[in-house]
Image (tube, rainbow, N blue to C red; front, side, top):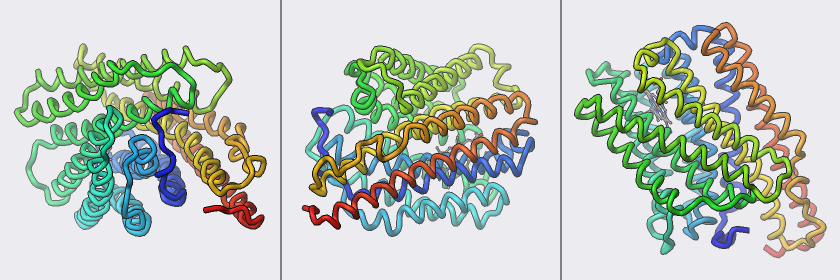
Amino acid sequence: MHPNLSFEQAPPLAVPLRFFLTAPWFGVAAGLLLVIAGDDAFASRFSPSILAVTHLLTTGFMLQAMCGALLQFIPVATGANVIHLEWLTKFIQPMLTFASLVLAAGFLRMQPMLFTVASVLFLLAGLGFVAIVSLALWQTPGSGMTLLALRGAVIALGVTLLLGAALAMTLAFGVEVPLLAMIEVHLAWGLAGWALLLLAAVSWIVVPMFQLTPAYPPAFSRGFLWLLPGAVLLLSVAALVNSERLLDTSRLILLLIGASHAVLTLNLQRRRRRKLPDVTLNFFRLAMTSLLAFALLGAAALAFPALADLPRYAIGLGVLALVGVFASAICGMLYKIVPFLGWLHLQRLGAPLSAVPNMKGMLAEIAKQRQLALHGLALLLLLVAVIWPGWLRAAGLTLMLSMAALGANLYTAAHRYVRFRDRIRATGSDQE
Ligand code: HEM
C-alpha cells in the first residue's frame, strides 16, 4: 500500500458511487446519438450531433467519473477533508447530470433557451463543486506535488466551465467573438488543464500502487506540474493577442508533455514487478498509446499545416483524446476504484476477513475483459469511421454496448457490496 495514503478520511461509499454509476450512461447516450445521426455526425467537427456527442462524453461521462474519483482521491491522497457531502449528492450531482443533457439538447436543436439553462446549471453546480473541493484543497495542511496538481486541475475545471458557458451564450445570442480561438482556449483548459492534469496526478500514485511499477521520477512530475499549466496559459495569451507563433509554441509544448507522460507510463508498466495480466493495465496501455498517437498526429499538423485542413482531421484527434485516452483511462481506473472501495468499506464493518470477498470477488475478471474488448473495438471502429464515415453507425453501436457493459459491471460490484454489507450487519459484527 502507498505509504502516504490515508483511508480514514474516505467519504461514505454512496457519494463517489453516485457519480460512478451515472457516468457510463452518458457514454451509452453518446453512442446512441452516433447511431441515430450516422455519417452526418462526422460531416464537420462543428456538426450539431458531434458537438452533442463531445459534450455527452466530456461534461457527462468524463465529468461524472472524474468528479467522483476526485472526491475519493482528495481525502485519501492529501489528507484533506471534503465537507458538505450532502450538497454534492442532493444537488450538485443531479444538477450536473441534468445540465449535461440540456447542453446536448442545446447543440442538437441550437436553441438559445437550452444553452441558457445549461449554462446557468453548469455555473451553479459545476462552480459549486469547484468551491467545495477547493475548500478542502486549500485548507489542508498537507503539501506535495499531488496536492498542487489537484489544485491546478480544479482551477482549470472552473475556467473550462466559465469559458464553456460564455461560448454557449455566444452561440445563443449570436455575439461577435473570435469563435475558433475561444474554442481552442476552452478545449485546452478542459482537456489539458483539467482532464490530463488530473489523470497525471492520479497516475503518479495509482500506477505504481496498483500496477506495481517503479515510481514516476519526482523531477518528471515537477516539470509536468509547471509546464502543463504554463503551456495552457501561454496558449490563452497567444489566442488573446492573436499570435500564430505563440499558439504553435504552446501547442508543441502541450504535445511534448502529453507524449512524454505516455512514453514514461508505458515504460514504467514494462518494468512492473508482477507480470500477471491485468485489465486496468491494458486499459492504461490503450490510453497511453492513444495519447502518443494524439501527440504524433498533432505534431504532424504543426509540421504540415495542410493536414489540419483535412475535413475530419480534428475529429480524429477528438476520437483519440476522448475515447482513446480519457475513456480508456477512466474505465481502467473505475475497475480498480469501485471494487477496492467496496472491499475497504466492508472491512471497516469489522467482519472477519474470511467474510469479506477480495477485489476479484467483487467483480469477475472475465466481465472486465469483455468490456475492454468492446471498448477497444469501439475505438478502432471510430477511427475507421474518421476515414470511411460509413462505419460510424457500427462504431456508435459498439460504443453503446461497451458503455452499457461498463455500467452493468459497476452496478454488479455495487450490488455485491450491498449484499455483503447487509449479510455482515445481519451477523451483528458491524462496528461502525
Ligand atoms: C469539462 C468540461 C468541458 C470540456 C472538456 C469541453 C470540451 C469541448 C471541446 C473538446 C470542444 C471543441 C469541439 C471542437 O472543436 O470540435 C468544445 C466546444 C464547445 N463547448 Fe465545451 N467542454 C466542456 C464544458 C462545456 C460547458 C459546460 C459548456 C456550456 C455550458 C460548453 C460549451 C461549448 C461550446 C458552446 C463549444 C463550441 C461549439 C461550437 O463549435 O460552436 N462546454 N468543448
